[in-house]
Length: 140
Image (cartoon, rainbow, N blue to C red; front, side, top):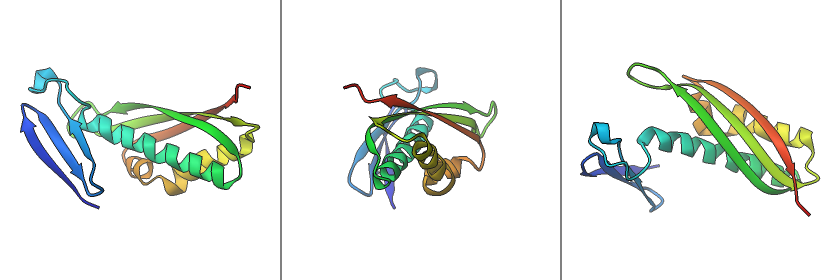
């Protein structure tokens, strides 16, 4: 895996990923940024959310569950001093589907957290990770 990050101006950076996509990051105004894009640590958190949501949907589909939606809200705390690593991250999943089995949703969240999501497992080296979930019935 590769990524090239280039300084644009102020505190704006452009990342070009090995898969050919671009991502803009910027800093807050008090650090010389213009608040034009997410902060680098916000992109770490967003990537972690994408990684785990991907896993949960994939696991539920492979388990023959009729999943129609999945969102995960991540709330993180960081250390007060440098390096300001994440110290606590809570994941709340809202999974939508038709007749989803609670035990299957629980299993999918646990498998992602403990086995498959590289990003959250990596963050778990510095942060306390907690998870909860809810099933939202399909509106019919």
